[in-house]
Image (tube, rainbow, N blue to C red; front, side):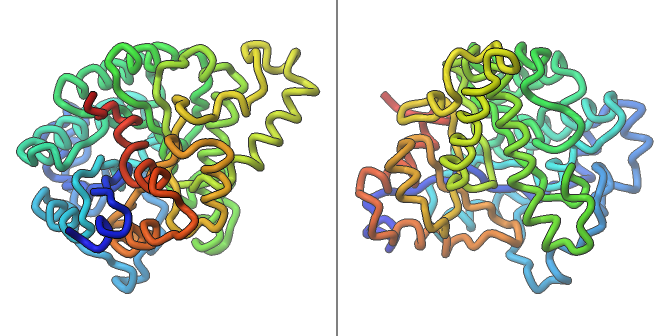
Length: 353
């Protein structure tokens, strides 16, 4: 038994890890004519728009490889973690692709690659989600269904770009997710290309703002447009912005709803805070070092908060973050089980009854 298991009594799981994409392999699955247009760009990350930032400060913040399944099996064993659900890395920038046809083609190629070349053969230890195009919700629904048929456990929309996920045109995707019993994740890019982050002169400033702003923007729009009321059985997850902003933001939203809800949020019958609760269908990934984690879990519920390794990204600290979370003295045994395992099982529909 590992130190983490001994202290928490839980074999932990990872709600949000990241794959290092193999651009050349993804390109092999891309349809004509996009495959021909992108040949030569795959090896330098040119399949999606790049912001030109040096995330790893040369290699000083490099945390290890993650572009082969065997790499990730080694990573899981270090925690240990029983399993991970992988999200894209450069694919997080897909929301900045301007060409709708190419965005759909890239998403389709990535989804084939992650399911066939990466997750298959891992004995369930490495799972993935479908990257969903944002311009064409009907294509997004098709990819969600195709991904589910190939073993992917959900779909991911980038939080960043010109889209707002509360638009009713996305309802077909949320309805399909309920039907398929898979989750819908909203994940920010952390890019200086993100709305609100593009004005900053240094990457440390842009990155600080980009993750939470992308998530807050989509969460607010989806809430006030009534998405969570229309789809109470669809599981939604907001990833890589922490969770301790929730009480503050829900209070703001409740105040706005009290004054203007009847006019500006006619699709919402209850204050926003009513939708975030124990046993609810809206989930959040936490950061191991969030100082107010325990009060948030005590107030809003512990079975909607999930551990995420964020490996191999430079701003994560796995496996230290796993140990840090399991060592928190103010978390009860039940809360540790929820955050380290139970919430993620529930979010991804992997609960064994």
